[in-house]
Amino acid sequence: MTDTIDFGSDFFFGSATSSFQIEGRSDAIPQGESIWDTFCAEPGRIADGSNGLVACDHVHRWAEDVQLMSDLNLDKYRFSVAWPKVIPTGTGAASAPGLDFYDRLVDELLGKGIEPMLTLYHWDLPQALDDVGGWLNRDTAYAFADYAQVVLDRLGDRVSTWTTFNEPYVSAGLGYVTGEHAPGHRNLREGLTAAHHILLAHGLGMERIRATVPDSDAGIVLNFTPVEPASDAPADVAVAAARQGWENEWYAGPIFHGAYPEATVEALGWDQSEVQDGDLALISAPVDVLGVNFYTRSVVSSVGQQIPFGTPRTEMGWEIHAPSLKRLLLWLHETYTPAKIVITENGCAMPDTERVDGVVDDQDRIDYLRNHLTMVHEAREAGAPIAGYMVWSLMDNFEWALGYEKRFGIVEIEADTLRRIPKASARWFAELAKTGVLPG
Image (cartoon, rainbow, N blue to C red; front, side, top):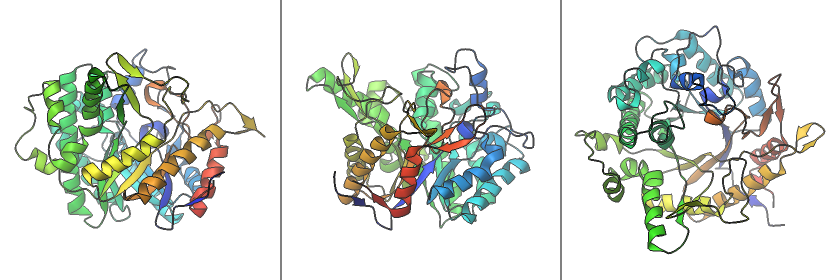
């Protein structure tokens, strides 16, 4: 048994969700279609053939869910706004019922003493915008800025932390290069174009946030998967460097250094014709907070990705390697010097088959969280400016192309009734959030 770890009173604990994964639809809100609605309707796209039309029914159960957050002693809650709920066709008139939903949610959070952290885009692009090119169309970046303005005008007086995008690497890479996510394209050049236009939208969104709520914290959420070569062989080292540039430096570079990583640009053969005068200055405007999403590392060789034999894995097949989180946080601190880092997502899909008195007894998830939080504390002690930690996810939900087969939540969602049942990990996390002390 190790000593307990006290995070101190200046460190917060919270949880996170995203709109498409939990909300579902309401007849009272005239919501537009998103690219994920379209993707779900295409046979074979979603592993279990499911969709997000109901999801966790948060759109109706939001008050119950906020009470649950309060019961779990959360300091902050990170959620995303669904663009199609607010502006159904992506541009033009806003939906009053859609804005009212988020208005009520924010008020309920504040009433329970929970600070909202709002993400403007978590992958659910209005289908009407995809019909005219989506993120391949530069105009989508300007449509995003106008959408951001609508949300800012409504919620800016009560939301103190704003992030523009969640994981642009996934939107561009999995959406336009590998085809695993909506809109399902498979074209590297399109992925590079989409990536730049998303970063442009981030810059335009930051402009609107600064102009409308200048006293708020504003930034972006990036996912990082640290890459290591399987050996010192030159071929393995070269593959790892290429993966590192695309997966971990492609977005952080322009945001913090005002430039794409040169070696990766050259390796990908990108002529940067999408980059217009002033774009990189806009993209690299200072951010107050960098949201960091971390789940695993990649060990790669010239013949593909490797997972060391005998290494524990999650239900996603991802290696569990907590030390990589500490290394990542210190690398970010040393390479990009962000003013503030928040762990905006960290968690794991586990089997959730063990039960005690009808409750999921997920000791494996507790071990994962404890080990990763220990690394967060060590990185913080070493100087990384880490302000808080948000577990992914508050509840089991729609896990994108995997449907409902993978469960990341600390709260179980009963399949038939949608009843919320806190797992053992939820009770454990609630005590941590209450005391700020990680038991040994």
